[in-house]
Image 1: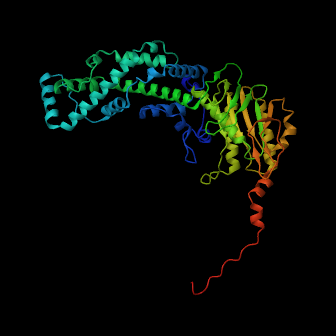
Image 2 (image 1 turned 90 degrees about the vertical axis):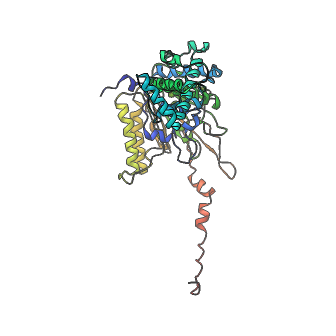
Image 3 (image 1 turned 120 degrees about the vertical axis):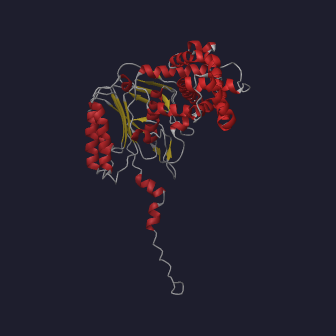
Length: 463
């Protein structure tokens, strides 16, 4: 099945990867990445931001257009503060959705009689009409002033078509009825004529104005999140697939230790080892989160980030079995690898991250499965992989994979009574085995070696 140009522009990212990266929800109840980036002022703006985060860009052209818009907004932030108020936006939205009487009468006498009836017998409706029309006029006036700002005449990227459409809609002849002052003092007849124009004749136009305002609200939110979190705008590159970063960190970590990333067609696989708690999973999530943000057109948590856009981003970190469907943990792992393999087999540009795969089976099967997958991944051009594992025995076999595997590790310092982690990425493969030490440090053996205390006797009287 062929894909449309729009579909080709969208990054493939499935529900499991959304869950792994905590894009919209977090199992611990903490803020999601959406919450982390959401600085919108309106409900509609938040809806647009969510839609953007559900469908990141996959094409360099689209990503760069968003980047240009965000850079411009950041540089001209004071002008974007003149956008319509929340009151005007939400008031107009309610006005268009509320069920109110329509006085769309061509006959002047019938319109006059209908106007009197609304005013005399349906005062609650009349005041809703007045309140809604005032909000819509405030929206139009604010957008007029905003779109006319001189610095916005040459706005780049995504902003250019948004502002062009905004100006075209605001220039419609009917909107000449909207004065440059508040309409609260207008009489009943004049106010209902204004309502007829806004809510009947130009309802679709008002809805479109709101939609454009929501798009702008979402872009401003992305720019504000960049500034608030100190994100750096990445460089979008052309050519064979690669991703390079200096000073990469996970945005959720307090006082993070930054690390580099280097994936390219000479080293398509990063093979990551090290003991538990040393930082492997956080490193994988940090890179995947940065790449995801880069495909949104946003900045990333790094000192420098360069990438060639991919078509699919897969993460396999927090797999679980599925009792209801009869899917064991190992089968869930196999299905996850299959999803990656299908995208690779189609010839798509894929970046996949796998955190300790095949731990749902015995060590021998896990070793053979890992090696077989790594051998095949290493031969696929225009695809990149991160693969963490405790199977350090794989190191003897990785050297024959045409140097496509770059081995890195995290380690723990074992001096003193407790383990210490510096979370710094090092070249090579870790041979640390700390499982027994962790169990001892947690006092587990001490608890199990203690003689059991006999259960207290319960007297017959107590019973």
